[in-house]
Length: 253
Image (cartoon, rainbow, N blue to C red; front, side, top):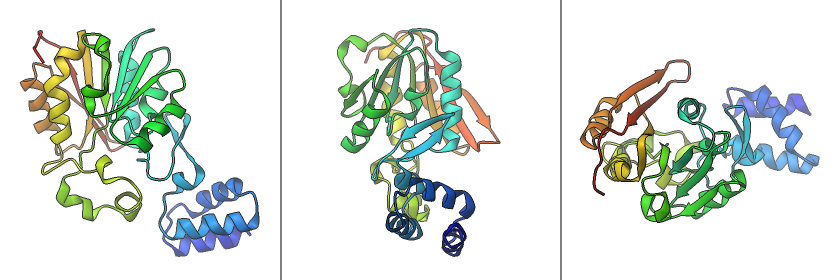
């Protein structure tokens, strides 16, 4: 059965057919269930949605159909955030999706927010000891967090609207457009995050935003405009780029 599953997946264009076959066989409770999972995968449904989890930064993160699947490149965002956190640090995972970044940060006071109800439900299962809010960016956060956030992380949508149609079907068909579409230049949500960040950060607090290499210089200018220092960090192995900012001076919201 394994060989036939591999052959079917390979014929459908799955690059890692052997690995995917093993995972689907392990996930299926019966031959009929395996047939169903393979058919859905061949049709283009993300493997992670079929399994119900994704391996991220060494942890299994639950994902559900209709929820953005954490990418391996976002492990750079998690790694940088971890390096800035101390025991008890107040962390906000904004545009959290499944809550993957907040879920892998140990020993912190974790908060997460997303505008998508399906993502919030998923994040709550991945952050049982954290607080997850449904709503639009800072409007969803409780007011006592104002001025207390030590580390704010965001993997906000950063695909330019015109590029959505060029994305693989796994993303543009099976993941919510709101988790992908970043507006004309891909930075609409990032600008909104940065505009209000200084008044929510603790003194010396940090903002970390994932972006693309091409967008990073423009995003760094947005950090500077918000009175935040800006350092561009890249990881070639992960094909990942993050802009890291630190508070400079008080700012009104």
